[in-house]
Length: 306
Ligand code: MTE
Image (cartoon, rainbow, N blue to C red; front, side):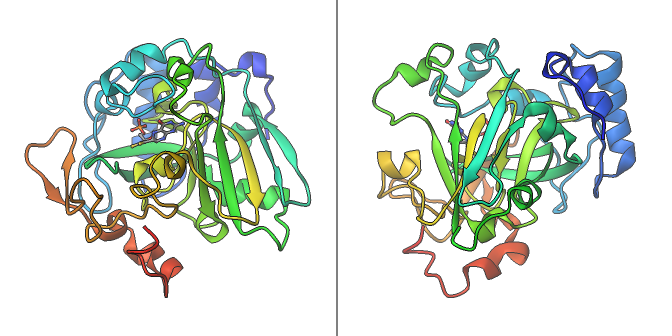
């Protein structure tokens, strides 16, 4: 495995040159993405690079859509202003402390995280607010990171925490929210192959507005579970209390599985607006990933455990 110092990590070409692609997307798409980025690292593709689709046949959203319509309350609640306000956010150097109920706690530097074999995964992202996108992420399964720290038998849940930097994140000066942003998964959810730690999208480094340098992606859950700019990951024995559970417990539960049959108290979840499309489309149970994940919830009442 190559090793590079953190002083070298930011330039995109360094990052891209180290990255290896795997998975169903195939080498061609990856090669196109790499070629485009290598030749013109500053130019963001305004449209999908190659018209690829997800496994349901839905087209990818464009790089532009994915990076200009964001939820990131540490910066602002205005989706169209996140990119501008996050532009100078420092993503290097970066460390992620992984600990709690583990045999081998460890602090990972960004370059350690990029040393995990990176794959491309095309996932739908369904926000609890009722909009969705199809996003080609790069990253690696969370379970590979967790395996390295050796969870103890007493570990039941995983707790994630976002960086606390009010000097750089104007939204964190708003005392209404109990910063830092916290999220959690059950350990079996965290170990599921779909659960990704994302380091990039569209063949490029992750942008600050999308959660650089490291964010979670659990595609069968509402988007708020996919916590951005992670600095701590702890294995714990109690169900973690997320920021949204603290702010509005009757609206946002721990599980947050996409479920068209359970309305949000203030709106229906039966349909969604795909960014870039007119009209609305039906929302799928578990966001279309039921075959892979429904068994995790056998015997659990998903109306109570929303
Ligand atoms: N993570 C942090 N730290 N802060 C946030 O405000 N918003 C969440 C999630 N992760 C959020 C976050 C919500 S509500 C959604 S829908 C997704 O990020 C949006 O991800 P995107 O901006 O990359 O599309």
